[in-house]
Amino acid sequence: MLIALTGTPGVGKSLVADVLKRRGYRVLSVNELARTFDCIREEDGYKVVDVEKLSERIKFKELTIVEGHLSHLLKPDIAIVLRCNPVELKKRLKLKGWNEEKVLENVEAELVDVILIESLDLVKEVYEIDTTNKDPEEVANAVEEILNGEGDRYRPGKIDWISEVGDLIEDLMRKGL
Image 1: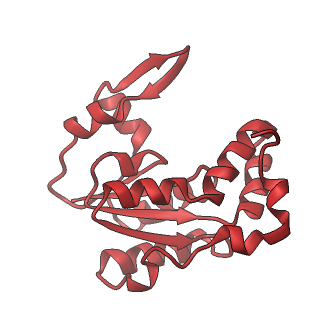
Image 2: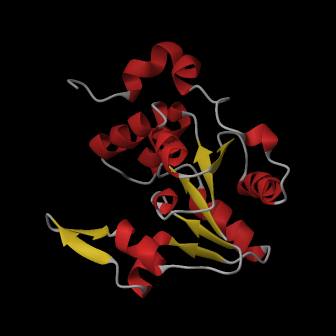
């Protein structure tokens, strides 16, 4: 069984994946799998994961959590989308040293639910967890609730960043789009 632990960069996927790994779960990263299965190609001078090729090559009999912002594209059984308030996400990405364009591109994606919508289009069972005011242990607890069949409160539709950010929306978007 393949579980996608996905979300916009900066929402806490890697931190939560580390906690789950320490708790004994089999956790792999999309990038790690792409290297292992030779599914990285060059595109416009950048290395890109070939998710179609990778999804055809990976098959897991045991429960496996795949972490990464592309993991929901790998035909998982369940997608768990980690979410973060765009105001907080912007701060996190700036702390990582990302340039303003890349920060705002990712903040906009979170604001308009890009990964959630992709997941809902591609995956039968989808959940979303707001990581904004939770530490990685708390988020890992929520993931475990979902894996134990107790995740109804994490069904999509409860997070509405546009309503929540209100007048701050202009600070979260690229100009001239």
